[in-house]
Structures are given as C-alpha cells and as structure tokens.
Length: 241
Image (tube, rainbow, N blue to C red):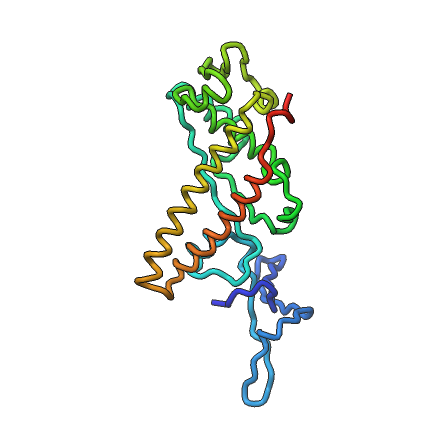
C-alpha cells in the first residue's frame, strides 16, 4: 500500500495490454519524500489518492490530509411537502438530471475566492434549482408567507394560485423563492455546524487524539466559511424579475 501525497513522486500507467506500471514523476520537488538509508538518498514512492472532501478521506482512508484544498460539504436536499408534491419534485430532479446531494465547495478553493465570491457564483444554476425545489412546501406557513400558497398540479407546481411552474427558468423567477431557498439551506448548515461543534467538545474530553475529532473540527471550520460567504451575498428580491 503506497502512501498518499498531494505532490506525488509516482503515478500509475496502464499499458495497451492492460498491464499496470508505477512510473516516477521526475519533476517532483517535495523534499519530505527524500529519505536517507545507509548514506544513500532515496525518494519514497507516493501516489495521489485524488482530490476528495474530508468526509471521503475519513470514510475511505481513515485520515485527513493536511491543508486539503478540495474539501466540500455534502448537502442533502430534503423534499418536504405532501406526497403528490414530493413525487413532482422527484420527477423534476430526474428529468433535469439534478442531484439530491449538493457538494458545497470550500469558499477559498480554486475558482471561488472568498474575497470575491457572490451567491450566484457560489451556487451553480442547477444547485439553485434544486434548492428552490426543496424550499417549495405546500404544508409550510413559512413558504406560504414567502412566495404564496403552493399546490401540486401534476406534472406542474402551482404557486400563489396563478403561477404554474413548468420549467426551471420559471421556477427561478418566482419572487421570493431564491431567498427562501437560501434561508432554508443556511438554517440546515447552521444546525449541522452546531451539532458537529457539540460533538467535537464531547470527543475532545474523551479522545483528544481521535481522527474523528480532527474531522469534526475541520468541517465546523468549513461550514462557518460557507455560511459566511452565503450570508454576506444573499440574493435580493429587488434583483429579480
């Protein structure tokens, strides 16, 4: 089993016949991989296990690499509402090829600098569509107050008694819905951060060297960064049609 390194000294290569070879990366400059044995210097063969979130690292490999710049938080969409409304949401997710799991990237990762991130850039369009579907709820007074009464009208969704939503463009254009969707997402993220912080405090007392403790601390930090960026770049209803 080869160790992982973000700047690997070797890589795998698959030949035309299906054979697998380990090839050295001659351009590596990671001095941490150099070891001396009986006066001779060697370079440890390390491979990159890939760009993964801390959640994947913990569950797949049992450790978290230092300064992981590819961390992300798995946000699972809750399809609330009546059974008929949920079935319409599921149909939309399938037809639009959306994912019920949204990976919220680390705000200061490549392509999303924390100093310039805005809500539109942070939430990709398909993410916001999914979050808007999550926020629509025909049994929620909060949803009714924000966007109006919601009712299933298979295969569509009726909003405020006259807005019949039949495509994702119209869904995003519903006044107040992106704001409600963002608020719903933030509420769940804050609850997750609070629960993980509480679990980290308990684990700190019983097992301060635990890998899980390190994971909880790192993910609390990640969630705070994500919450900060989203909160400071909330969509405004005046920006909408």
